[in-house]
Amino acid sequence: MSGRQKILVFDSGLGGLTVYRAIRAIRPDADYLYLGDDALFPYGALAPDVLTARVDQVIAEAMADFAADCIVIACNTASTLVLPSLRARYSIPIVGTVPAIKPAAAMTRSGLISVLATPGTVSRDYTQDLIRDFAAGVAVTLVGSKALAGLAERALRGEGLDREAIMAEIAPCFVERDDRRTDVVVLACTHYPLLIDALRDLAPWPVEWIDPAPAIARRVVQVIGERRDRGEGEPVASFTAGEPRETALRSALDRDGFRAFAGAAAR
Ligand code: DGL
Image 1 (tube, rainbow, N blue to C red):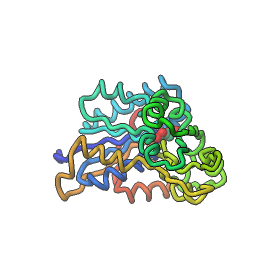
Image 2 (image 1 turned 45 degrees about the vertical axis):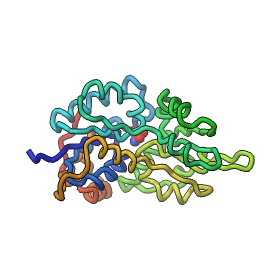
Image 3 (image 1 turned 135 degrees about the vertical axis):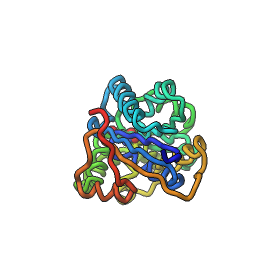
Image 4 (image 1 turned 90 degrees about the horizontal axis):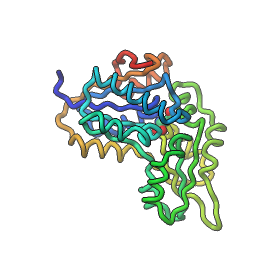
């Protein structure tokens, strides 16, 4: 037993790495299990009951081996559904990732913001409630992208960056109305910050892209405390489709500190 705190970071695939990186930057002393349910990726089009049951199952299997002190659901598509059932089941802090509509509404000067997310996330009551509670007087364009998370996965796996396809997915975020233009885009899927350079490059005009990862990392520190010592914990990754083979992805995971892979959880 290391005595180090243990943090489980969960996503449907590789997108949660954007959140993991931000957390590990301020809590390098914790042990991590990064769990990607890539056997069922993408989550964006799954029916809510299927998704809820699946997340319950894979988290339960992971928790049997890795008794985390904190679970981070680094996936908007899952968080906007499963947080209540996970909180009822585990007595440890569960930190979710939900669309950053509140900071976007506070930041906009033009009054036009866009929320770029999976089709699942844009259809959730949770997202509608955030708009009602925090974006009064702001015009919110919801853009449900079917393909962007997959394009991000492919890029990280070294299968190339399809700029034309990315452009087609983000184009509806850019709205011109009267003399005003969208000035803030919420990246409400953790995969999208993996493409941030391309997003900036392809945008028809400059906007603020909100990546929620730093705020989630701060929240983790609020609930489990500051760094405890100078040592570094051990990051382990587990993917339900099995250990990744692609060289580009192996190098990316290596750069993120993953030297070990746990056996695949539920398939
Ligand atoms: N990374 C996930 C999110 O934040 C979803 C990607 C997917 O599986 O469709 O919503």
